Image 1 (tube, helix red, strand yellow):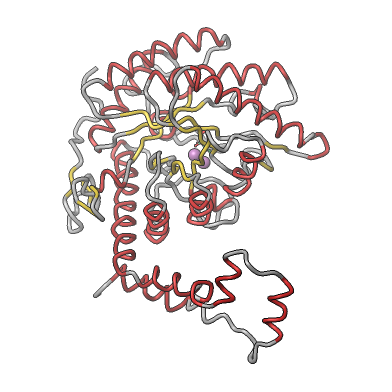
Image 2: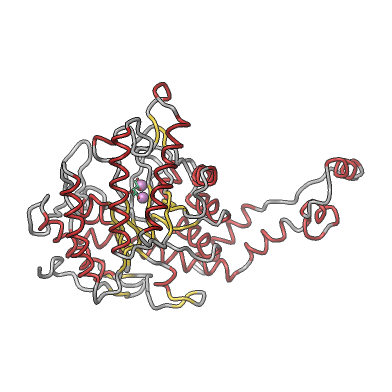
Length: 441
Ligand code: XLS
Ligand code: NI
Ligand code: NI
């Protein structure tokens, strides 16, 4: 197939002053930041589903975008055209990774054997396309939420037959992930939760999810999958309540079921905010538990209560995200744009503009995070904030586990003035962040 995105050439870095819609203003892949190239700090990935499949349909209206790519949808020709389009898109933007669900790659048939044959065929085609490029598979996953059979979940379903079907999809998705050299395999528990507790055995459902994950680990390791499994927490939507509510809940679940050695977390910005957290909160929770695996880079809308999957635009949030990632020493995964254009932005130029916005926002986030680290005032403040545990005898005893309630009560009773912990200086720190970010204006 010939060029699909005609009239759009390779997107280049032109700098902040550029007014070219189809140029990077901040993302300069070769620029070195904190000793590493921007492109290494920012392993961007394309999400097959939003970029190549979604046409902007919502529950009130049909699609606005045309993703035929010149052939009839729902056919293998179309599946291949999406591969062609995806690779051209990634090459034009300099994106090195892609992520997919099984049903993003091929049309799903009522007979799983037919679907699986199609997956074999398309993965051969993708492998062929990958040759001669440096584009890699970041992660794969099975869509266990769209088909009506999964209305009560996959691992959490009440039906053993549906559970078996989910297992069959996971097995095949793992085969394809390994075949494509994927770095990770994701479980997003899209319907692993409940609508009402009145009909739900929560304990049993959670144990069954763990059983499915354990089988996935066993099978994956058997077929040579060396990467990480990821849970992608999300508190709700489509279900009223989802068991992988947030990072802390998912980590507790993984530990309770002995899955924490094989799994890390894939943190999505808009899911963290749906859980009532900031993006950086869930990144921090993952990082301090050694479980920061990968990121679904998008953003939500504070006025809307669902997963709007917008391209990242909020530079403060991208800055905080990159601070967490850098402080964690990086991740095994990447930054997957689980993001879609707004429904009225339906042109091909908009597809590119969405990724350019996201990549530039994260480039700014990286530059800002590096500047905050180099400035050092924030890190120094946090270090000094806990200095009493480092510098005083009683503090050292507490941290060293060498004291007890009796000794501490005795110590407290002899304190002359009521103990005050020192100012948290939030406003001072926020002001420092602004001056580092915006400098002389
Ligand atoms: C949906 C999720 C989904 C996962 C992959 O909200 O973000 O897109 O990333 O199944
Ligand atoms: Ni996601
Ligand atoms: Ni999401």
